[in-house]
Image 1 (spheres, rainbow, N blue to C red):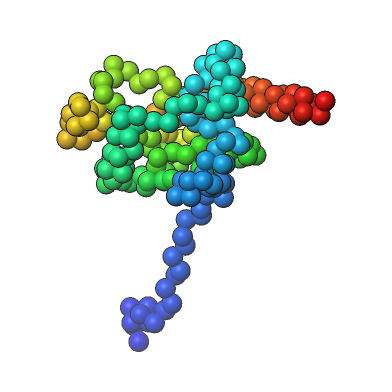
Image 2 (image 1 turned 180 degrees about the horizontal axis):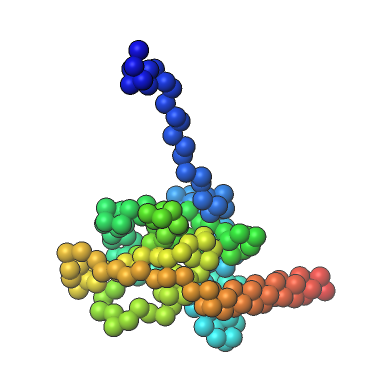
Length: 219
Protein backbone atom coordinates (compact mmCIF):
# COMPACT_ATOMS: atom_id res chain seq x y z
CA UNK A 1 0.00 0.00 0.00
CA UNK A 2 1.46 3.34 -0.98
CA UNK A 3 2.16 6.14 1.44
CA UNK A 4 -0.60 8.22 -0.17
CA UNK A 5 -3.14 5.45 0.50
CA UNK A 6 -1.89 4.94 4.06
CA UNK A 7 -2.35 8.63 4.74
CA UNK A 8 -6.08 8.24 4.09
CA UNK A 9 -6.37 6.06 7.19
CA UNK A 10 -4.27 8.22 9.49
CA UNK A 11 -6.25 10.17 12.09
CA UNK A 12 -6.47 13.87 11.37
CA UNK A 13 -4.74 16.24 13.72
CA UNK A 14 -7.27 17.94 15.96
CA UNK A 15 -7.98 21.56 15.17
CA UNK A 16 -7.02 23.64 18.17
CA UNK A 17 -9.38 26.49 18.92
CA UNK A 18 -7.70 29.78 19.83
CA UNK A 19 -7.37 30.44 23.53
CA UNK A 20 -10.12 32.74 24.84
CA UNK A 21 -8.87 36.24 25.47
CA UNK A 22 -8.66 37.28 29.15
CA UNK A 23 -11.44 39.87 28.91
CA UNK A 24 -14.01 37.10 28.37
CA UNK A 25 -13.47 36.04 31.98
CA UNK A 26 -14.28 39.55 33.25
CA UNK A 27 -17.90 39.94 32.08
CA UNK A 28 -19.98 41.57 34.81
CA UNK A 29 -23.42 41.87 33.18
CA UNK A 30 -25.20 42.15 29.85
CA UNK A 31 -27.43 45.04 28.83
CA UNK A 32 -29.97 42.42 27.76
CA UNK A 33 -30.72 42.26 31.50
CA UNK A 34 -31.03 46.01 31.83
CA UNK A 35 -31.76 46.05 35.57
CA UNK A 36 -28.65 44.00 36.40
CA UNK A 37 -26.59 46.01 33.91
CA UNK A 38 -27.64 49.36 35.38
CA UNK A 39 -27.09 48.10 38.92
CA UNK A 40 -23.58 46.91 38.06
CA UNK A 41 -22.74 50.21 36.31
CA UNK A 42 -23.86 52.18 39.35
CA UNK A 43 -21.31 50.34 41.50
CA UNK A 44 -18.31 51.34 39.40
CA UNK A 45 -16.75 53.90 37.07
CA UNK A 46 -17.81 53.44 33.45
CA UNK A 47 -16.50 54.81 30.17
CA UNK A 48 -19.47 57.20 30.17
CA UNK A 49 -18.31 58.54 33.54
CA UNK A 50 -14.67 58.78 32.45
CA UNK A 51 -15.60 60.66 29.27
CA UNK A 52 -16.39 63.64 31.52
CA UNK A 53 -13.19 63.48 33.59
CA UNK A 54 -10.78 66.12 32.31
CA UNK A 55 -10.02 68.24 35.41
CA UNK A 56 -10.21 67.91 39.21
CA UNK A 57 -13.40 70.00 39.09
CA UNK A 58 -14.95 67.58 36.62
CA UNK A 59 -14.19 64.74 39.06
CA UNK A 60 -16.17 66.57 41.76
CA UNK A 61 -19.06 67.14 39.33
CA UNK A 62 -19.05 63.46 38.37
CA UNK A 63 -19.15 62.47 42.06
CA UNK A 64 -22.21 64.68 42.55
CA UNK A 65 -23.94 63.05 39.57
CA UNK A 66 -23.11 59.53 40.78
CA UNK A 67 -24.40 60.29 44.26
CA UNK A 68 -27.54 62.19 43.31
CA UNK A 69 -28.38 60.82 39.89
CA UNK A 70 -28.85 62.76 36.68
CA UNK A 71 -32.11 64.31 35.52
CA UNK A 72 -31.21 63.51 31.91
CA UNK A 73 -33.07 60.42 30.69
CA UNK A 74 -32.63 60.88 26.95
CA UNK A 75 -34.04 62.89 24.06
CA UNK A 76 -34.78 62.52 20.35
CA UNK A 77 -31.05 62.51 19.56
CA UNK A 78 -30.24 59.69 21.97
CA UNK A 79 -33.32 57.80 20.79
CA UNK A 80 -32.06 58.12 17.22
CA UNK A 81 -28.63 56.88 18.25
CA UNK A 82 -30.07 53.79 19.92
CA UNK A 83 -32.23 53.06 16.88
CA UNK A 84 -29.32 53.39 14.44
CA UNK A 85 -26.73 51.49 16.49
CA UNK A 86 -27.76 47.96 15.34
CA UNK A 87 -27.64 49.04 11.69
CA UNK A 88 -24.22 50.64 12.08
CA UNK A 89 -22.99 47.65 14.09
CA UNK A 90 -24.01 45.37 11.21
CA UNK A 91 -21.90 47.51 8.86
CA UNK A 92 -18.94 47.27 11.26
CA UNK A 93 -19.26 43.48 11.37
CA UNK A 94 -19.55 43.14 7.60
CA UNK A 95 -16.63 45.45 6.82
CA UNK A 96 -14.27 45.02 9.79
CA UNK A 97 -15.26 41.72 11.42
CA UNK A 98 -15.90 43.22 14.86
CA UNK A 99 -18.85 41.56 16.57
CA UNK A 100 -21.52 43.66 18.30
CA UNK A 101 -21.32 43.45 22.08
CA UNK A 102 -23.63 44.39 24.94
CA UNK A 103 -21.48 43.03 27.77
CA UNK A 104 -20.19 45.07 30.69
CA UNK A 105 -16.57 44.21 31.55
CA UNK A 106 -14.32 45.07 34.46
CA UNK A 107 -10.59 45.74 34.25
CA UNK A 108 -8.07 43.14 35.39
CA UNK A 109 -7.73 43.44 39.16
CA UNK A 110 -10.09 46.44 39.25
CA UNK A 111 -13.72 45.33 39.65
CA UNK A 112 -14.96 48.94 39.82
CA UNK A 113 -13.35 50.00 36.54
CA UNK A 114 -16.05 49.17 33.96
CA UNK A 115 -16.79 49.50 30.25
CA UNK A 116 -19.37 48.39 27.68
CA UNK A 117 -17.87 48.79 24.18
CA UNK A 118 -20.24 48.57 21.21
CA UNK A 119 -18.12 45.92 19.50
CA UNK A 120 -15.41 43.41 20.40
CA UNK A 121 -13.30 41.40 17.96
CA UNK A 122 -9.94 39.81 17.31
CA UNK A 123 -7.73 41.29 14.58
CA UNK A 124 -5.81 39.35 11.95
CA UNK A 125 -2.77 39.31 14.24
CA UNK A 126 -4.84 37.96 17.14
CA UNK A 127 -4.96 41.15 19.19
CA UNK A 128 -8.15 42.50 20.72
CA UNK A 129 -9.95 45.25 18.80
CA UNK A 130 -13.00 47.25 19.85
CA UNK A 131 -15.64 49.33 18.12
CA UNK A 132 -17.47 52.38 19.42
CA UNK A 133 -20.47 53.79 17.54
CA UNK A 134 -21.73 57.38 17.55
CA UNK A 135 -24.32 59.41 15.68
CA UNK A 136 -24.03 63.16 15.20
CA UNK A 137 -26.07 65.98 13.70
CA UNK A 138 -22.91 67.96 12.90
CA UNK A 139 -19.78 67.14 10.88
CA UNK A 140 -16.66 66.52 12.94
CA UNK A 141 -13.58 68.60 12.26
CA UNK A 142 -11.82 66.35 14.76
CA UNK A 143 -12.89 63.59 17.13
CA UNK A 144 -14.41 65.07 20.32
CA UNK A 145 -12.05 64.70 23.24
CA UNK A 146 -14.73 63.14 25.43
CA UNK A 147 -15.10 60.30 22.91
CA UNK A 148 -11.36 59.73 22.91
CA UNK A 149 -11.39 59.44 26.70
CA UNK A 150 -14.23 56.95 26.42
CA UNK A 151 -12.31 54.89 23.85
CA UNK A 152 -9.05 54.88 25.80
CA UNK A 153 -10.87 53.79 28.96
CA UNK A 154 -12.52 50.90 27.11
CA UNK A 155 -9.14 49.83 25.74
CA UNK A 156 -7.71 49.82 29.25
CA UNK A 157 -10.61 47.86 30.76
CA UNK A 158 -10.61 45.15 28.10
CA UNK A 159 -6.90 45.16 27.26
CA UNK A 160 -7.43 46.17 23.63
CA UNK A 161 -4.79 47.54 21.28
CA UNK A 162 -7.03 49.77 19.19
CA UNK A 163 -10.63 50.84 18.58
CA UNK A 164 -12.59 51.54 15.44
CA UNK A 165 -14.54 54.70 16.18
CA UNK A 166 -17.50 54.83 13.82
CA UNK A 167 -19.83 57.79 13.42
CA UNK A 168 -22.84 58.52 11.25
CA UNK A 169 -23.93 62.07 10.53
CA UNK A 170 -27.62 62.75 10.08
CA UNK A 171 -29.78 65.66 8.96
CA UNK A 172 -33.18 65.73 10.66
CA UNK A 173 -32.47 62.14 11.72
CA UNK A 174 -31.85 60.94 8.17
CA UNK A 175 -28.28 59.65 7.49
CA UNK A 176 -26.31 62.06 5.30
CA UNK A 177 -24.06 59.41 3.71
CA UNK A 178 -24.74 55.85 2.54
CA UNK A 179 -22.05 54.48 4.88
CA UNK A 180 -20.70 55.79 8.19
CA UNK A 181 -17.27 57.33 8.66
CA UNK A 182 -14.66 55.62 10.79
CA UNK A 183 -11.15 55.97 12.16
CA UNK A 184 -8.84 53.68 14.12
CA UNK A 185 -7.84 55.02 17.53
CA UNK A 186 -4.63 53.52 18.90
CA UNK A 187 -4.10 52.75 22.57
CA UNK A 188 -2.44 55.61 24.46
CA UNK A 189 -0.85 54.52 27.75
CA UNK A 190 -0.16 58.08 28.91
CA UNK A 191 -3.79 59.11 28.50
CA UNK A 192 -4.96 55.88 30.11
CA UNK A 193 -2.78 56.56 33.16
CA UNK A 194 -4.35 60.01 33.52
CA UNK A 195 -7.85 58.56 33.29
CA UNK A 196 -7.09 55.85 35.86
CA UNK A 197 -5.92 58.57 38.24
CA UNK A 198 -9.11 60.59 37.76
CA UNK A 199 -11.27 57.46 38.13
CA UNK A 200 -9.56 56.51 41.39
CA UNK A 201 -10.00 60.08 42.64
CA UNK A 202 -13.70 59.75 41.84
CA UNK A 203 -13.91 56.45 43.72
CA UNK A 204 -12.19 58.11 46.69
CA UNK A 205 -14.75 60.93 46.75
CA UNK A 206 -17.63 58.46 46.55
CA UNK A 207 -16.22 56.33 49.35
CA UNK A 208 -15.66 59.38 51.56
CA UNK A 209 -19.21 60.59 50.99
CA UNK A 210 -20.53 57.14 51.85
CA UNK A 211 -18.59 57.16 55.13
CA UNK A 212 -19.77 60.70 55.90
CA UNK A 213 -23.39 59.70 55.33
CA UNK A 214 -23.00 56.69 57.57
CA UNK A 215 -21.54 58.89 60.29
CA UNK A 216 -24.40 61.39 59.99
CA UNK A 217 -26.95 58.56 60.19
CA UNK A 218 -25.30 57.11 63.29
CA UNK A 219 -25.61 60.37 65.22
